[in-house]
Length: 427
Image 1 (cartoon, rainbow, N blue to C red):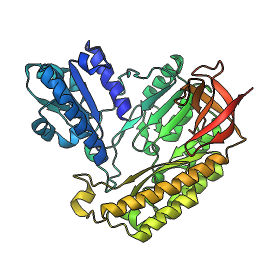
Image 2: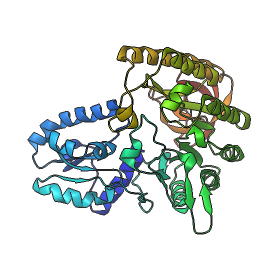
Image 3: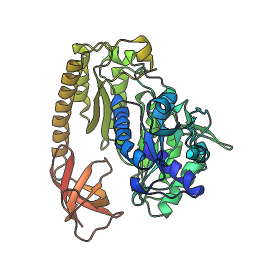
Image 4: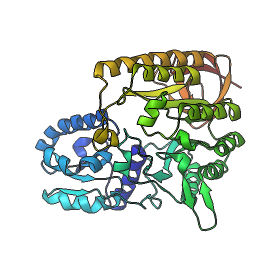
């Protein structure tokens, strides 16, 4: 989402005559787009600012701006504590960036962090920073699920959906420019809802329309909330071969006690019912997830239930984190971060080890199968190899031959690691 937001920011600034540079030494302004969902993300930004201090001392006219969720969360604190920061701009105030940047030329500081109930940047055609095969399309902004651990509703505001026709138009334009894959983005894409002049759009409706642009355009999405994952969407996915058969379905915990503590609005039984629906309607679909180890009040039994959930679902991939309390969340105000760090670490390591075993077993089962792969580029392993992803979003590495990025080829899987499939191209 931050990558997609950065492309919107670059479009707004190019319209005002600014040029993009990848070299900090050439920049008059350095903009850092930030995340606040985990403490580690904010710590990385602090370290980046420390690295820029010498550059700012060498060039006093350099202006450094903090954009995004960290700007929204910390606001005045960043301007007062971080001497190198000239301005902060929140996720809903990017249209004010050009005027803010002119304002700070004199050496003053400025902030624009008002949250909006309407802003979707639907009229902005993003600058594609990674011109090529895949592109992101933001279909909605904000979130109102208010999970107790999460800062997003406070940094990105309430949920609002973008005009469906502008999304379809952007996807069609990308395909005409040569892109072969789009990913529709939202904090909870399943709750996408737009009241158009002639009809009401659900997420399933939107996916159906985007998929019809061309069978050569792959369509992905992120992220799904389990409480809103409908059978209607699953049947739309089955209907279109070009809708990728991969669903990211964050579980966060396998414990009913923890899910209630997190305000996730579903039970383990509900979650497993959605998994069963995916397996029934889309048997070839891969499933990935997010999980938090050591949330407030988590017991050893709660942790064991999470491990049981992993063994039951057998995820193809997981983003796994130990809990870090975020200021201003419900948890920070009303719950106690009472799981010692060493126990959080141990539980996280156990989840990671189990998921590694499951992912390797899942990938070994792929050996001998043939998949359609969208070629993306040269492999990091060797210049003689290319890589791409199959519909299940698994990375596949194969011999380079005379293939080019953007091509669809068929690859027979011959080997694997827990993270990657290796194969041979077939006619």
